[in-house]
Image 1 (tube, rainbow, N blue to C red):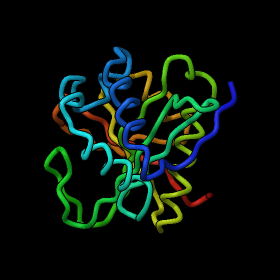
Image 2 (image 1 turned 30 degrees about the horizontal axis):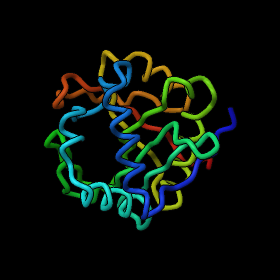
Image 3 (image 1 turned 90 degrees about the vertical axis):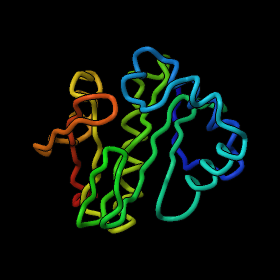
Image 4 (image 1 turned 30 degrees about the vertical axis):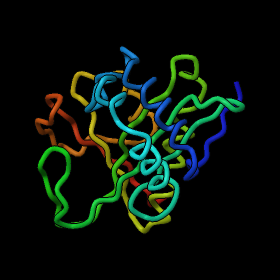
Length: 178
């Protein structure tokens, strides 16, 4: 399997939808998402077109996809939050920050380096936006994901909180060496 990573293109809404539906239906990955298959299935074409467009260009959102040939086998999105902007858990920060969300790698692409390539692309993009760290939150019971993030250079920040799916652990990765 040869994995390449690139930023999503604006016209790829249908492919973004297909991968998201695959992600939220994966029993191993489902603990990481805040929506269900049924909720995602109910979203209209315009929603997916906007998601692809916003992830393809600009500085507030960047979506990266892992490809094996023409097949999408993973994705990661970076969301930039401005100072004072409230996040999904009702928290706001006094500083701007960039966070990884929507991390997914298909079962057949696990252990191929796809997640490392996705997280590295997200880190490079985030550093190019002027951030010194890249953050993420992971469910406290998702030990497999925590191990992957640690291997990719993320460390616990010491912050835990209760989010929509339960107890979450905040982690961050320094971008100073990029």
